[in-house]
Image 1: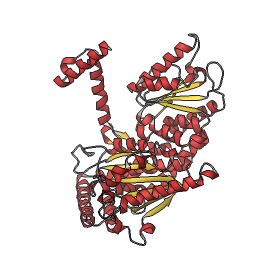
Image 2 (image 1 turned 135 degrees about the vertical axis):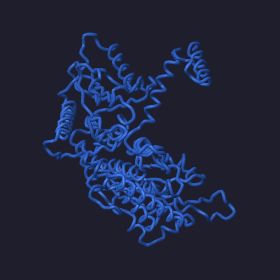
Image 3 (image 1 turned 45 degrees about the vertical axis):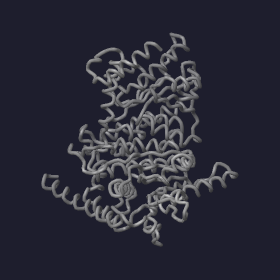
Amino acid sequence: MNSVGNTRQLENRDAAWESVALEARRLVGIHGARVAQDPARFANNHQRIHGILVDWSRQRIDQKAFDALDRLATSSDALGFLFRLARGDVLNASENRSVMHMALRVLDLDEGSNSSDDIRAERQRMLDFATHVRQGKHTGYDGRSFTDVLHIGIGGSHLGPAFICDALASDCSLGVHFCTNADRREIRRTLRKLSPGRTLVVVASKSYTTHETLENAAFVRSWYAERVAADVDISRHFVHVTANERAEIGNERVFRVPDTIGGRFSLWSAMGLPIALAIGPQKFVELLQGAQSMDQHVLSTPVGTNVGLRLAQLALWNVNFLGSTSHLVLPYDTRLRMFPAFCQQLEMESNGKSVDVHGDPVATHTSPVVWGGSETDGQHAWHQFLHQGTQRYSADILTTLDTAPSPGDQTVHRWILANALAQSSVMLYGRSDSGDETHKNIAGNHGSTVILLDRLDAKTLGALIALYEHKVAFLGCMLGVNSFDQWGVEEGKVMATALDQALDGKNVGLMDSATAELLRTIRARIKNA
């Protein structure tokens, strides 16, 4: 697009933004409970897609505001943006990279292009290896089959695989253990459960420079050295997943991840090896199928009925026009307990930006604080803050409709479903009939989206994760930020390296006086410990 076209698009976007602001000013004095009284509210504010019901009828918004948000999405060319992402255009401008995670879950890749051939070949290598491990064809140094997988990674190399393995744990035939923290207590505690001869170690790092991962991998090697004879070849016990072709790995097995895949979007690639090991290649393929079905929805569905875009519009509306400072992800199924942490990285690392794609300061709020946890535990922790605190928020409430674990659990399952719906209702409607007991009043007026999964299986889970990925991409497009870099993360690593050297007594003079004094205090305490 030429400069005239860019200017016109920005002008249209600014005008559309102002039209949304006008609708927000119209609704600001109207309690959400009043908006939700429309008899057709549910019919007009939900959608079923690939085993998932998404119900935003309890959000503080009406159709006129949605119409304005639809104009904003159109003026931002949100659907065109997703097409360009799927096509492989360079959308990560700061790193001059395509964003290719959608291509990873296309099972019927066109023949002929190098990228599709590479994706297909590496996926097959990974699935074949997982099959061999699960069937006992790839064994440890003493010929015994593996019973456990130790996965070493952090951030995007960890959260997606760990979440899926936890959610689908009933399908796991291998014990999968995840170590992320550089604090040795975590890995020592994990290793106490494992047998060296029956443990497969997966070292996952896209860059293969991540300090925590490399330190933990080195520690596991020392654990082997203490328990296995020096002449024993342990290379069969180590597998590596990385995009760094120059990583010093020796003769151990390596699976490659394209450098066009961001860590938080990488579970569909070889980073998903622990998933394939845990639940099997067929279910891993079903995970990809679920994600691809959601991809097809967002790419073929217009503004107004596109579920991924609708979730992004609600996020934009709540943060920039209703004053929400945080967004909660609240799963009412313990199998989804890690989903809030997964969403936290996905959304905050993607859209937690203060400059736009042109490097100019943004004039809007970008990502809210994303948090949450397993329910109903949270009802006895943070729901007091939600219902009677002073800050604005929005929420996604997730639950599942598949059969309870056993017939005797049906009553409990029904009670959990009732709690999910009750919390959504209290968030919106509140309570104001307490008379003189004002300490019992609840203001309400907080919007929430209820997401019901027909069942929690690999295919549905793949569709759910892809839905949230598309929400993030659509939102970044409408905000005008680059959702696919994370320079704020990188700077912390640089500073940590400098401070680590200072704690070793080097370059202390380069620090500010307060930091230098703190470093001296820490060094003295360590020396005398």
